[in-house]
Image (cartoon, rainbow, N blue to C red; front, side, top):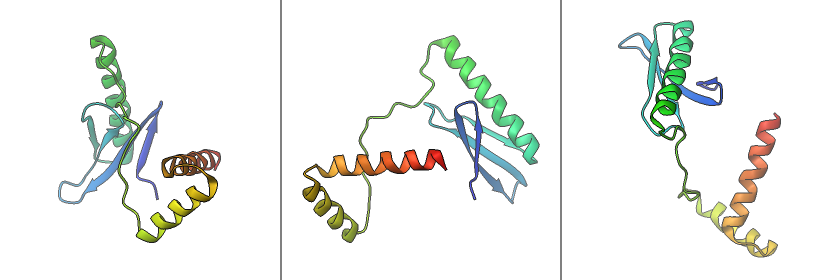
Length: 115
């Protein structure tokens, strides 16, 4: 189950508040916190589309970067056994652990896009 909306090239994560009886979410991968909400799925989708369009328009009119900037580095936490296996595999292949992880991620993301 994916609690994600897609509109244009933007993604929005979705949650439900039982207390407020409302669906709510935020646009992912942008520089600011941009949220939206709706009392039903139709209203939620409309609010998401409107939030994306408004945010893009605001950024374009002010010259602000829309998409979040990524450094190209991040920390991960994995089981020590996986870390050991990955380190050994990188030695066997004659590449760095970073190169191994990048290759694995590229292969996973390519396969995921084809699915």
